[in-house]
Length: 454
Image 1 (tube, rainbow, N blue to C red):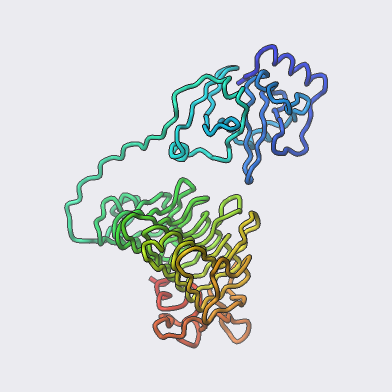
Image 2: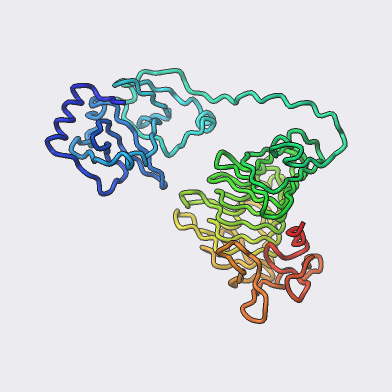
C-alpha cells in the first residue's frame, strides 16, 4: 500500500531518479530502506538478533526528523525487505504510553495499549517498540484503547467419580490437557509415545508418566510454557521430554503448597528447562537438561529456583546431568540441596551475566555435595561453594554430541564420575553401570536410574 502524499511521492521519486538507487551492502540499526522500484520507506531496528522495519507514513512525518535524509535511503531486494518483521508499536520520548498504529492512506490512527498485562496478553514484543517524537504521536488520530480479554473457557463436564484411576493417552483422550481436565486428585495419566504440541496446565495432584523414556515429547512450540503447574499438592512427572522455544519447559508457581517431582525426563531447547518459585518445592531426580537458553543467547538455563525461602522449602536436585545450557543451576532466595549431579559446559556466548554452573544469592542456602562441576563459564557463583565429595573433572560421556550422556566405562578413558557419588548405601545405583554399587554421578546413577527402563 502506498502511503506517501502525492506531492511528496513525486518529489521522492524525482530525487531518487537523480541520484540513482543506493544498494545496501549491509544494513545497520537506524537505516532507511525501500524495495527496488518501491515507494514505501522503512526505518530499520535491529535488537537482540531481531530485525524490524517501521513504515514512515508520509513525507511530513519524515521531514520532522532532522537526522533522516532522503539521500540515505538504501535500496534492497524484495526478499531482503521481507526478512524484516513489520513493527507498528511506538512510544513518544518521555511518554510511557505504548501505541499500536493503524495506517489509513497517508493518515493513521493510534490505539493505546492500556496496561502491561494487556501488552503481554496480546503477545506483543517489547523489543519491537519504536521511539518517536511528539509531533508524530500527535499526528495520528486516537482510537479505542486496546485491552486483552481472555476468551471464556468452555465449561468442563462434571466429574462424578471419586476413586482414582489411570487415564490413557490417546486411547481415552486425544490430548493430555483434555485428560487433565477430566482427572481427579490421585489419577495417573499414562501417555503413549508421540509428539504432543500442547501448553499444559496442571492444577491437581496427578501423575503424568510416559510409556518410554525419550519417546514422549510435549512441545509448547514457543506459544507458552510447555507445562505450567499452578496447583495440586503432589504432582509427579516422569519419562517425558519437555521443550518450548524461548519459554519455560516446566514452570511451577502456586499460592498453595505444591510438591513437584520430576524424574527420568529430558528438558531441552527452552529458555529455561525447569523453573520453580513461590510455594513450589521440587525434587528433580535423574533428569537430563541441555540447550536451555533464549534465542538471543543472552540468558536462560537448566534450572531456576527463586523466592521459595519465604515458605520454608528445601528443593532437591539429585543425580541429574546438566550440560550445554546458558546457566546450569541458578537459585535466588531459596534453599537448594544439589547432590550427585554432573554440571558441565554451561556456557552462553553473549550478555553480561557470567555463565555459571551452580549459582546462589539472597536468603536461603546452597548445599552442594558430590557434584562434578566442570567447564562452565565459572563453576560456582554468588555464595554457592563446592562441598564434600566435589569434583572438577571432564565427565567423559559416551556420545555427548549426540546427547548420549551415558558415562564411559572400561579399563582406559573411563569416567571419573563412576562410583563417585555419595557413598551412603541409600544412594547406591539401583541398576549397576560399573563394577560397584556406589552411586554414579549424573542422570544414570543412584536409586532412580532404574526409571530409565520402564
